[in-house]
Image (cartoon, rainbow, N blue to C red; front, side, top):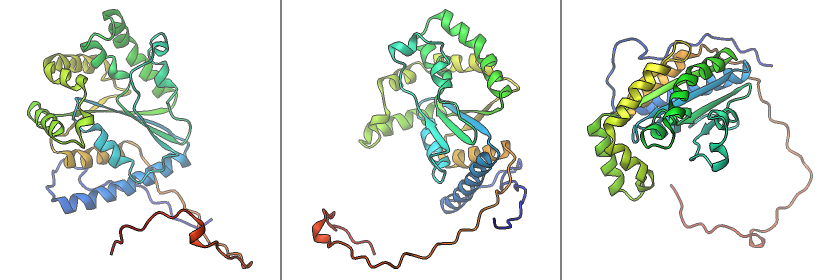
Length: 279
């Protein structure tokens, strides 16, 4: 084992109340630095057998997928999983509401990122009438208890609400309508969400009133500027879990075998045609 000195994690730049304006080039540089920090955090989670759950909620087009993509860019998918569940099946609808989410909770040394979560019941299910008033009221009563139970069991639970303005959401909807590469992101449910802006706003306010608890508070991230949101959210997340650099075992490559070996000719294999050469 190599003798690696453990250095306590230093706070990333920009963690003070002072706001720093940077350009796109500096954004890429800072994002890369934060992604490396996330990799160190992942190693610490494995080293200390922590269990971490991060929820990403917010309006459609708020940028949940984009920030998750940037958070996981360098992470090991064996220890960091993204969960984005489809609509519940008929069988799942007969289960305890939280049951299908519990099966995706992390084991020791793992981190799970939920791209939408059990808060579907407080938002889309309630607004669109996919659950009864009784089921909604029961969720509001049970959710804080459920989350306290997770935290008391040792799970680190972090909840982010990505906030986008009315005007910016409309701009992003139009961009998705006009871009074939993004059109799949625009579902009939998204259109309804746009039409029911006030209903969703009231549902979000009530959800915060019931579920913004001390053990698992909501953190709100402004996302009209996506690049700013990426840096601010990741920077904040890193501040929530104290971590240190894990000692790295020095790797020494073994000598290669010296037994005679002759590769088969390429003509005997189905080779992919070389259509491009990149300089």
